[in-house]
Length: 129
Image (cartoon, rainbow, N blue to C red; front, side):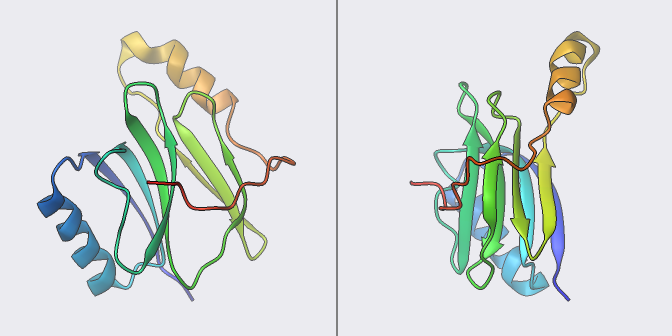
């Protein structure tokens, strides 16, 4: 059995908050966590974890973080930066951050319509910092 979590982190813009996330992951023994609204510049290393990001133009990212023991394959990213997906042991893992405001309805619908699916674009390497 493995533990999967999801968290909207609203930036995580300081090293202190990143350290709190690391501590949470280790204490709760989280194997895979999906992050929304991650600030790409601060979430580039986590002790004992690999980070896969999909960065939007504004610097915000969706991310998939896996323990070092887990190897995902077929990593795909939405062009909008709002989604990332991968496979692990035949299970498709999908993380999408869809905007919730009425003004962003078209963007939200586009994100859902273009959910990452399995493609030949297999790039299972963690994001470079």
